Image 1: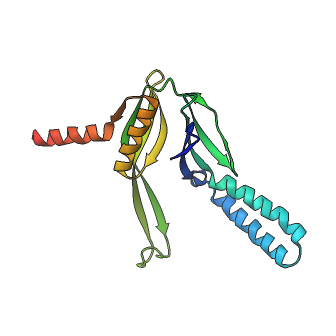
Image 2 (image 1 turned 90 degrees about the horizontal axis):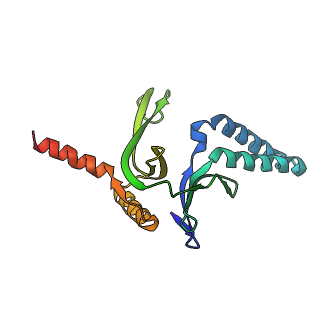
Image 3 (image 1 turned 120 degrees about the horizontal axis):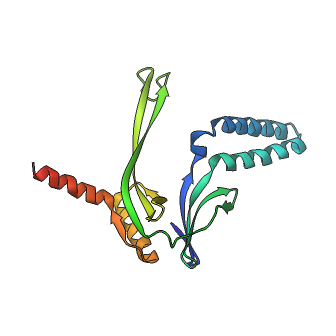
Length: 190
């Protein structure tokens, strides 16, 4: 989380790689980059420069930095995408969001390793489960949530939600902790 002049809080989600859909463009970008390097080595710099510029533009598009900006002064929020050094996205009023909540979430990814590079025992597939805590601003009128942050470490997520709720004067719920306590209570009653 980064704060600019005490007015805007920037929360970067980091590179999203077009949600995994940028592989073809990435290969094309590598081809353009290698071709441009070869042209510059062969003293054809005039032909290499457009290739370098195109590769930089494509990489910025493929990497796809995303995040959230919270404007405390004007009480607005926006999801942003970043292209090169410019952020873009529509600002919306934060007034309609009445609370913030923290929940545990996870997603699973699988890799197929046909040559056994990762496992060293031959062809296989491997599954990874990624766990994180999601902080969401809740708009009860439209029953919508706006993801503010995804944090891997629970203590950091709690610290973040407490700070954000205090700065915007909103109540917060730790849904993860509530579910944990409810499960513990059910187990004690058995």
